[in-house]
Amino acid sequence: AVYRNRLPKSGCCGERELLKLWAWSLVEYHRVVHLDMDCLVLQPFDELFNRTAEVLYTEDWLMANRNTKVAPAQGGFLLLRPSASTFGALRDLAQEGDWRGGAGWGGSGIGYFFGGPTIQGIVPYFFSHLRPGSAEILERCTYNNMADNPYFKEDDECRDRTPDRKCSDCRKWPIEHVKGTHFTICQKPWNCVGGSFSWKGLCAQFHQRWFDTRFDLELNLLKTA
Image (cartoon, rainbow, N blue to C red; front, side, top):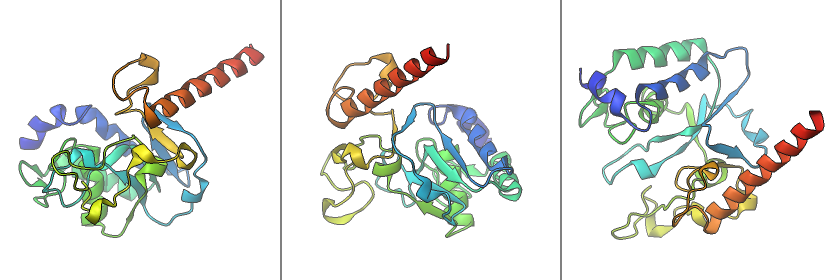
């Protein structure tokens, strides 16, 4: 009952976020990349397709708190090895709904954060707790850059517990080293939203890349019309 009541109000999209689990059912493919609609691929990441991990993803420490031990998965970028058995196990886990208030999935403490009852919590619980060693955590600033602040506001400690403030600061990442971006903090370029993030620093460069990509698409469509 706790899970059933919490799920529709969890994260951005409630129970609809669990649709991403169906990516594991696409067994006709060697690998599947699941991207949110507000993501933009800037460079190829072919080097990831032969990795042995069952799933590769980036962490989202912005959804965590100081007591979080296992970080949320950032659901906008998942690169996975499809498997009917894995899909079945994930589906059964979601249907069982053993998510507990204050304790997360299975009482493990994993998934008690924003979006924890959905994909953001299920992925780290399943692949780090139930199947330890089966996931690979990628550098978020390279593959799923959101230009996020990696520090707690109060004292500037790293959210991911990296000592001496040596965590990756995606806001300072050269765009030439970014292979994928996710328009969350930077806002959606197609909405023409202003404000302190959208058209400053790396966010401005991401937005310009989106408009450049759209312009190239329009030119190609005109050639085929």
